[in-house]
Image 1 (spheres, helix red, strand yellow):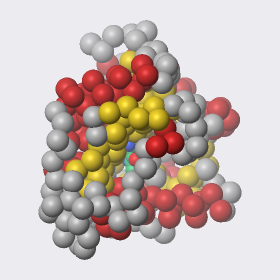
Image 2 (tube, rainbow, N blue to C red):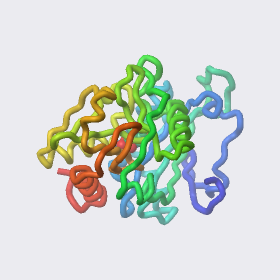
Image 3 (cartoon, rainbow, N blue to C red):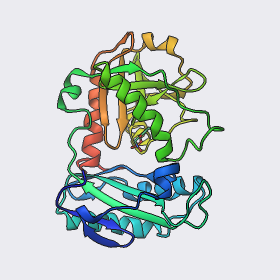
Image 4 (cartoon, helix red, strand yellow):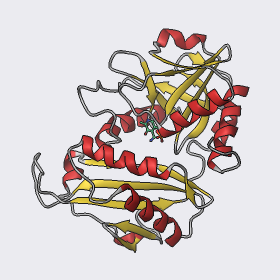
Length: 290
Ligand code: PMP
């Protein structure tokens, strides 16, 4: 991704894409002291931009550092990046990290940096997955307890587990992996939240050790607006065979149906696809937020 034309916002300035580099002694590279966002622009406007910028700041606070820009400043910088790159439909990646001014586990004096990049990114799992549904592996890696790491933070360190899980799934021919948590309850996929449907009702795991995704919250609202009951609760693997439909939600993944997870099978059903259409209508401003 480093060798292309374009502009990246770095510490207050727009610089050419190829020049947006860091030093090898960057603290974040050694100790994962970085947090990021993933958001999509539709027709030149980022969906729920300020919520993403606020979550970025909160993620950093949970790692003990403060991003030296306000939510409004981050919002403006994101808009500038879209404009400068001439992007209408894009994925955006704000990233904040501790710099290379200090080495060692402790890095109180390392500078806090912020970079914002954007590029075109189509369907996260490809167009085929939307028709056929995703095939998920069941990962052996589990989401850690909230007393092991700040699990509410979109911290790069927590993605080590996700990359391990997704690489192992892909090596076996799956699209992605479903992860359980430290208790053995169903948690989420490697970059998206999980929803299940049974008898016209929606079930989703309580987000007590993984991100309560912005897309997750949006889809819950959309479902309730349609009069569909949404139940947040602990879901154990034993319950998976009773669900008819399964879909994932995320800023990148949007709403993507799942057809298979380990030994369990699901249909790419009408309710999942309806919520997918609702979500796309909302982000593309074909329906209002209220
Ligand atoms: N869980 C993980 C691990 C993720 O990476 C994401 C994507 N940010 C989500 C859930 C969904 O979050 P959101 O809907 O806010 O993008």
